[in-house]
Image 1: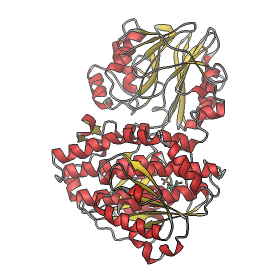
Image 2: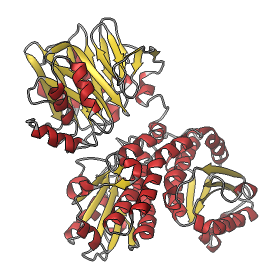
Image 3: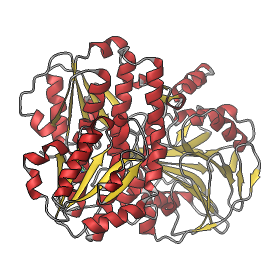
Image 4: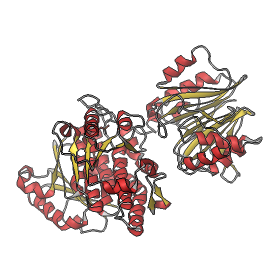
Length: 609
Ligand code: M6R
């Protein structure tokens, strides 16, 4: 995720900004830059790659000045490059802006600004902010920023500086964090506390809609309607290591907790009008291209493959198109049957997985259209696919994939609704019903995340066992596979997922007294069948922990424990049912003292075969 640093005070800003950016490296980034108010004017230095590349480029020509802003960019709009790196300037090179978040209406703003005579140099959404500030500036930077952010739809944490008002930084936020560090005769701004934790522990936390003017000696915070806000000073008690993880003990937990934000970001500009409509114009698919698709082939590895399995259920149900899902390592060597009208969909968080990339290349060689769902802009998969639908999960650091999986599911659902709309299968009302249900999911995930205590208790039961089963029918089976992978990957417990109806064809022999069985029962059409399977397990004295929708069959009477889930349409339930399974795996791994973020023998990105 992008990182922001700002400094104003008596000291040279450049080393402070670089140090702050380095402290934010853990967030992941692909380019870095700084802008300084030097005596000779506004100086911007930026470079693709690591901060070290920027430092080498600057060399001994360090821009002097004691006011500046810095940024590490995780590409969203436009590939990683020198030009797309932040800070961004207006036309006059008198204003510089750094920004985290996504500006949903940047294309229309850009067009309007171009008509007003502004010239753009990057592909980013952020550059519109710099031009907007420039456009509205008369003699007051706060006023200009305030007017600029009023026009912006989406999320932002931003800091601006300008030549004409050299004694201040102006910042604003909406749906993206920003904190102000309070020093003695100097002040800091950052997207995240670790950037300045070695310099001050006293902070203001900016709330959504607030703006601030930060000078060396004074910080003034204003509400969106311009009223001065009396802020409370917070004392940070975390140590630097913890702060990197947002106060969580592991990246995995931090990333699980970030999922509502990741989901919301992934819907931005796509689920319109609170989900009543959908727009994936970024795919530039004509209605005719959408109609011509006769079959879909989903190819991926690991967790991304499990997302594909869920996608199959949704696509076949809604689009009534045949969908095949394959592991990339199998697909690439089995001479798959690909008709010209088969859309090949590759899914990869990193966009660098060797098998997935090879599968993509094979499909392209065969002349098939390839659409990628990936989390990394500029990755090999993103560059080589014809079309890309980005998940906006932000960098995933823990080896175990969590927020990427959830945003992959959401992207598959959105793609399904979009194809349904373009192919004329979904009328306005059905689209609106499903879209609004999708739009509600982030809040529903939030409500599950608040129930960690229940899951801790369940994990206490799982932790001593060396074998755990996951069962489910229909799309629950696909989620069971992901739940089992999470548990085995980080807790080293043998975990096996089974289609509930298959138990009696072999696995039932392994059900012994007390063995934990995680049963997913969220699919209305097969609920009775799922219950019968649960009874089969109970009859062999298995310990059944059931995940079911609130208020459905009274599972409590039949099983050892029920975790109730909020209600969503059957096909979207995986986004809700997998979250407790992620937490269960996490707490079990912690109880077994496993190295959660870096499990043995595994790498985050599998770039070799
Ligand atoms: O980067 P990718 O999505 O292509 O990675 C695919 C798998 O290696 C990955 O999902 C892996 O299974 C995860 N570590 C599971 O948590």
